[in-house]
Image (tube, rainbow, N blue to C red):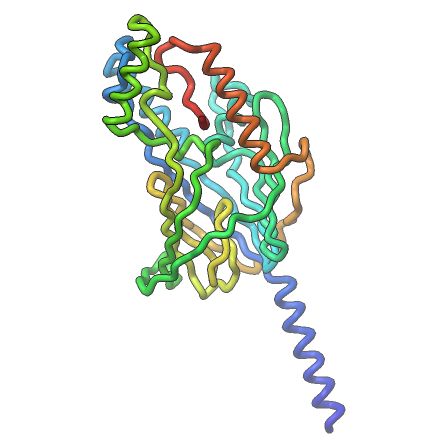
Length: 298
């Protein structure tokens, strides 16, 4: 009898381990970012109200994306949902570069077991494989709750450093900063038009609010968010909101959760420095043109 009980315990333990190993899920996220307002941009007299409206509408559409997160207990892949391109759209290279600057493009692989991530990115015709440690956010668990798609969720907040290569972090400069730049502009030349960068900046830190559900007990989430006692179903950083719209657990067909391998291996810091340097060179080439390309850092 003792042998039978011991055998049953072994079978039960093995079954639990196997169930955890085979556990997998899929979550669909809708990402929306507040488009920066172009009104009041200094020096851009050539931009008419109609042009300004069109720019804001185009920017709004570019900042609305759908992502798929496939996850298990140890790792996940987060990727933008592929869509058919409309005729006359930008080339794939430029589209991928812009997409990567706005939270899309490539495959974001998170290994929460080893606390690392890998993401393949394309920038100015070159392919990079960014590999680094997952950011450690000091989450503050709140008592506030709400339901998302039938799941009970709890609130958590954290402060994190803003990425210098994420276009979505741009915000209008304060008036006192603009006045300082106005004086500097006049010293250089009163005839030069003001660039996009003179009106917007990237903050040093941003406050993140997340909603996670312990009913799905994994420390995964969209993008590079992780580390909570439950799947993150919603996250907001002040300008971007990522909301889960669908969850499928333990589907018959399992997704292939593998780390991307294509591209030149580089750290996040090295990648950011590369992007900042190239964007600075690009801005200098286009200096003086109204509505020039936005900066990705300073």
